[in-house]
Length: 121
Image (cartoon, rainbow, N blue to C red; front, side, top):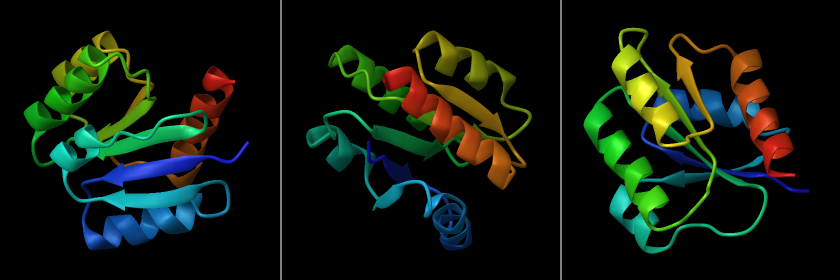
């Protein structure tokens, strides 16, 4: 099964790192606007969202909450600062797939995407 990781947020350098880290195991699609993403969320197996909670933790929580309120079980992997314990707990309560604490290694990121694939299968 092909995996597509929709990447929301992150700096240009982080996006390049993510593409390098995941390009061999997944298709990468960059998303610039969470509202546009909500208007046309991906469907089908092998889809997940990788979102940054660095700039606006509340916006990331709102996005995941909106996905769940719409009945979308899209796996979500959130990357945030190590100080974001409360956000990690809230993300887990919203049934996101994973919360990765910065700094994130290539191994951790790949493992999170692989877990998402095995959980969905």
